[in-house]
Each structure stands twice: as structure tokens, then as C-alpha cells.
Image 1 (cartoon, rainbow, N blue to C red):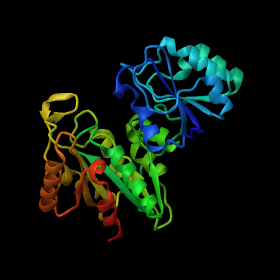
Image 2: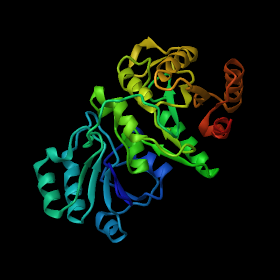
Image 3: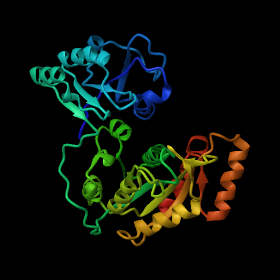
Image 4: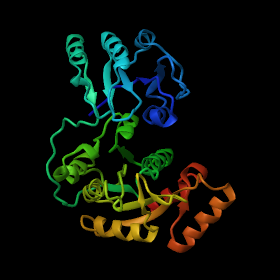
Length: 333
């Protein structure tokens, strides 16, 4: 699905920074796509973009009104609807990463039809997919994988993509989650694809291409997470990665949302991911580790990464503190 820029990022009456993760992700990685933010009374968070109303945004050429926030249950709140309807009246497409479909509201659906605008629910793909084949295809692919969910897979993939663009390498970012889709403007919300078709959807997302082209594929979930391992497995088979980056949050003790389950070791995760990846690409290998060291001091983070480098004989970096240049260096070998 394609989302037309520029965006007006709607953050409603949010009060928690994590509730506007989608909006802040877009404003951080692609400020060229996001013109401004719009909030309601009671909102106490911000993306730091300029504040703008819908009519002013229309005059500035905004094409899409993005619901850049989430709430419990992923539902569209009643007090957001007047803003959505106003955006429709001003000719803007409406894009949402929430679970509840926009057209589940008859008033929104009717208004969109009247004003000839699109309703885009990125968590409800409209494409049809074939099952995966595992057939070799040209081009090069890097996939980020993790010891857990929310371990930096999207950030690491985008950081690698950004570094490669700086070096004028032939590279494309392939979004597989709602935040990534809004950042790139297109992609497939892979966790919403019927399980039989996940690997085929990834093959479609990253098709055969120029032999020197790198596709940086955003990872999802973890092969060790009981809730989301199915998505991770289909993704790794469809990606057929030549290169893998292991993402890990240092000092996290249990799997996200599962306090009864301890995190696996990095060795375990690397071994299992290589077994899975080599089903469709026998040459798959790890090229480095991306470590979230936010719980540590700078000096301790450097020592930790050095110890991982000695243990695994691979570069280990915190992408926020150290950049990902040394990971990208591995892609030229």
C-alpha cells in the first residue's frame, strides 16, 4: 500500500510518549514526509514538529491525515472523528495503523466516498499473496532479528539503510510493520497476513532485483517469543537473507509481556535464526550485533560491546550511541 506525502500527524489527546510512537518514528526518520502535527485539548506530548490545523495543512499541500497514535485495544476514539471528517472534507486521505478499520464507522466511510478520498488501514492489507516458494532470486537482502520483541529491529534496519544511502550504495528499505510503512510510505504489515502466506508476502515485498541491490528488511518478533515466533519464522523464510543483524536489549530479564519467561542467550538466538534462514538461503550469515545499551553508562556500554565482539568475532554496536558504520563495512566483504 502507498501513502501519499506530505502528512499531517494526528496525535489527539495523548499523554504518554509511547502512545505516539508511530508519529515520533515518522518525524525522526522522515521529517521530509511529515509537515506538521495536530493535537487536541489535553495532549501533553509532542513530536516536536510544528503544530498546524487541518485547513492550514491543506493550504500547505498535505495529502494524508495520519492517525499517528495508539490506545488500548487499537480502537478509533469517538473524539477523534470530527477531526477525521474535517480532514476528509479538505481532500485528505486518512491513514491508520490501528486495529479497528476506518470504514467500520459508517459516517467516515460515507464521507470518504462523497469526497473521493482513500481510507488506508495499514494493518489490513488489501493485496493478495501467494504462498512462498523459497526459489533463489537475484539481489541481496539483510534482515534484522531479535532476542525479543521491541529489541530495536526497526531502528537498526533504518539506521543501516540510512548509512548505506550516505555511502551511495544501492539500497532500499522494506517495511513490515505499521511504523515502518508510514516511514517508507509503503510496505506490508506482515503480522496481519494469514500465516500460510507470510513467506510469500515477503517474497513479493522484496522481489528479484539487480544483483548489487540491497534490500534492508525490517524484522518482527523473535523466534524465541511464544506469541510471535510464527511471524518471525515466515518472515525469515521469505526474506532469504544474505546478512542478518542480531538485535538485543541489554539487561532485559524476561520476554516482553511474558514475565514468566526468561530471555534466551544471544548464542541460542543466533543458532536458531541461522537454522531457519538457511532453509531458503544456505549462505545466510550474521554480520553483526545491534545492542540497546540505554540502561548503561557510555563507558560500560563500550566495554560490553567490546566483550561481545571478542565472543562472537563480529562488530557489536549500539546504533544510537555508536552508529552502524561498522555493520555496513561488513557488507562490502
